[in-house]
Image 1 (cartoon, helix red, strand yellow):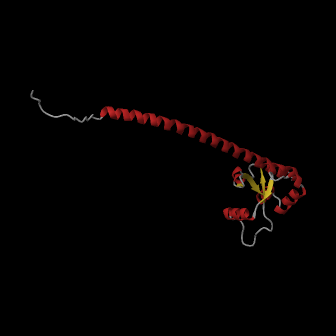
Image 2: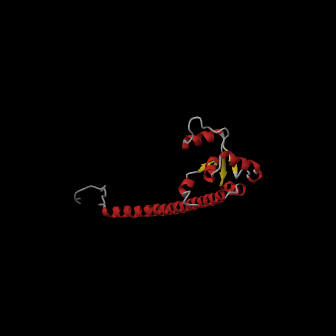
Image 3: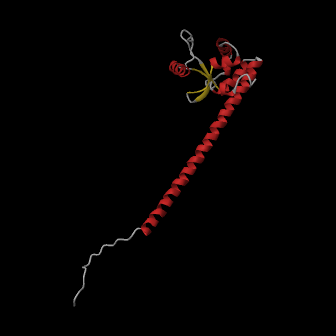
Length: 172
């Protein structure tokens, strides 16, 4: 099944909306091989399985913004209803609503992709933290090294002292 749907194709269908990683109903329907209308019918028949943190309907401005980003709609192919967005838990719940063999296999691939993305983000955070720590050490060392250079410069530079007395011989 993973040969049929490459990970990259699934990754490109995961969006960040309202601070959550989600997949849209049209993309899920395409992956599952069912019409969007049928997918949404099954969801509506089982609304109790999809609380707000599993699925939400996009606001009109979100849908317009997303449409302009992905630019997939052709003239005259607008949807009648605003799309639904499914979080990772919502996608997992779809497997209990859609019982086809393909839906189960696709769901497994999607769950693996979400996990992979989460691991990549975790690795990036670790790298960012280590880089910040290294930066702090270098900055501290830079200050210490600069003070050493300042001391060396003081030793190397000729010392000019101003004489405030009179020049010459004194006759007593």
